[in-house]
Image (cartoon, rainbow, N blue to C red; front, side, top):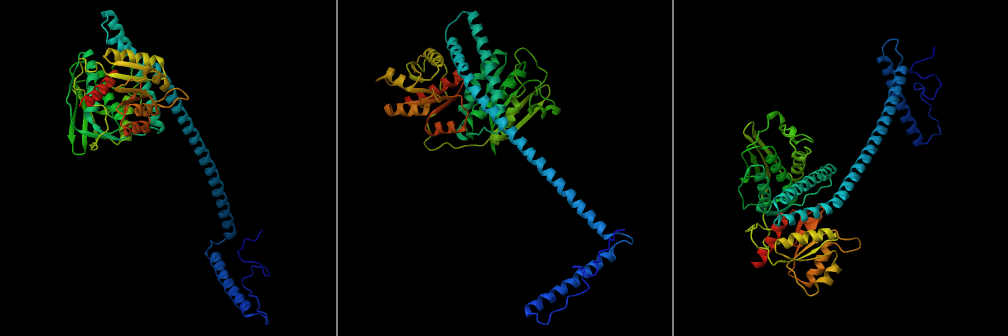
Length: 466
């Protein structure tokens, strides 16, 4: 049987009980070291004695030592396995993030390509609506317009949710009058509400807020869309309420209301309000999920109040803002929506898509504008020669090898310093919107909503006449 005693055998290097003799010719330093060595041996011997005396009768101290070594080895192996697993998880996460980013870039590229023909189609249908058509043709044009609106909403929803999930959407916070946002939405949704037999009551406000106009518009537009979709009779309310922590933009309805148990679920993906499933209800159930994500990015608190059977109220609170002393020119509230307020306005349009140029020319001509279109800067300079214009509508992304829209605008403003500029783009990057604002330009996103374009032009003409 193997000896398991902790006591070293006599004569071994670990013989702690037999101190080494000090040679007579040892130097003082050697004597000091040998004395220290003897002291350490006595301490080690005492510790060994303590270990043996503390052990249970019949136990093997070295067995406990071996067991401890085995446990340490197991801990080491499991630590290495855990580290390997963590490394694999990090690699898998990086791969998933790369795939998600690739998907986002793909959707952004596809959306840009799809927005071009969609933008042209919207311009053509809007131009048709400006003409007097037979009743049957008017109905067909209306159906086409609604179908294009559905396509735009579905495509925009998919791109938005992808960009939000990928974390690549950066807000462009700037101060602006809340009327700049709500006046357009009120006019747009008043017509939609009337088509469903509902009345939209709008209470305007002169407050100035600080937010990303495009993202905030998406929030309020989703509120209004849901209110109209699920309200069968009664009215819709769009208005504002001043709060100590900011301006509360609210949308109320006289719909069926939302039970308490569903008020959190409706902000999740693919959750639908109520049980409505008619032919016009083509949403994906992502509207409020997008609202929740955008509100989180903007740090704008949401509020929901509802009474089943009586209606619901959705609200978002936006911090107050302050306009600069000399604000850059931009869209303002339209003093009038009818009449020939745009008659005679001279507009240049630069877009590398000939169909968009044609559609824009048809729409603007219907408003009484004088239009000159071109697919690039050189083409416009050849056509315009000594002509002058009041407004330039320019696409940000022009043909490959050509300068972008901002460079085109800078070149034309050197020739005509007073030229107003509106940049049109399918790119939602905050940097582009921020740069256009710093330059004093307007900015519209594709597909261009004719009502917003008209409001922008009316605002620019009002500023020019002022």
